[in-house]
Each structure stands twice: as structure tokens, then as C-alpha cells.
Image 1 (cartoon, rainbow, N blue to C red):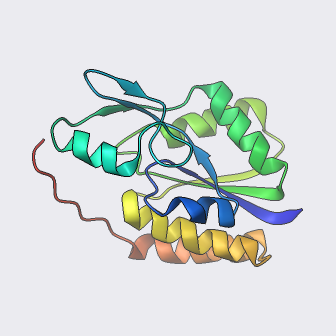
Image 2: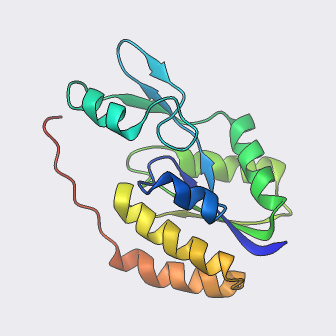
Length: 166
């Protein structure tokens, strides 16, 4: 059993093989376009990143976070692999996954060692933090060591995006 497992959400923009190679658990989102709802992008999803960017260039989608049961299953999967679970999520400015995960933890896992962060970023910036934390976890670092690095990195990582339109 690992000391630490990492969970992130689907806005974490990194190559799919990294998730598998580093045993990173992913909270799925629904991606909603006017003509179709997809069960996710990327990791095990119905929508490839290329398809997503093509569609998003024509219409900005909305999203839906997973229901409490899916959040609980993802947490259970990570807890089966590690003593501690660290969740690194997209900024709460964009979605409520952080807040909803905290509620599920409080109700269903109050005695488990789970730490959640609103990273204040998304996309490649989130991936930078997740990738580095997952490498530390895979190397067998302790909860304290991984958290110390995360808390050192978070104020330093920024996200800048350019959008065609709002």
C-alpha cells in the first residue's frame, strides 16, 4: 500500500498515460453542449481533447460535477491504495467539485485521512501540481512531505488563458 494517493479532476490537462502510470484517480465531469452531453473528456471519457477543443471553438460548453456517489467511489478507490488521499482540484471559481467533495468526506469518510485543495488553477497549471505530487507519492514520500511541497508550489503556480469569446 502506498503512503499517499492523488485525486484530481478532469480539467487536469496532461497526457492520459500519466494518470495510469502514476496511479492518479480522476473525478469525472459531464461536458454539456447544446446538442449532446458527454460523460467526460480525456481519462476514460467519451470526448477526446481534440473533439472538445473543436466543439469549444464553436460553442462554450457547461459542465456538471459528479454526483456524491461517484465522488465517494473515487475516494474509496484511492483509499484502497493508500493511507492518505490528497485531492487537488480546479479552482472553486469555476466549479464546486472542491466543496462537494468536502461534504462527501464529512458525511461518509470523517475518520479517513483525506486532504483537499482548491488549487486556484486549472488545465496545465493544475497538471503541473498534480504531476509533481503524484511523482512524490509514487516515490513513497510521506503525507507531510507531499503536503509541504504542494503548499510551497500553490502560491507560485498561475494560470493564464486566452479565449476566443465568452
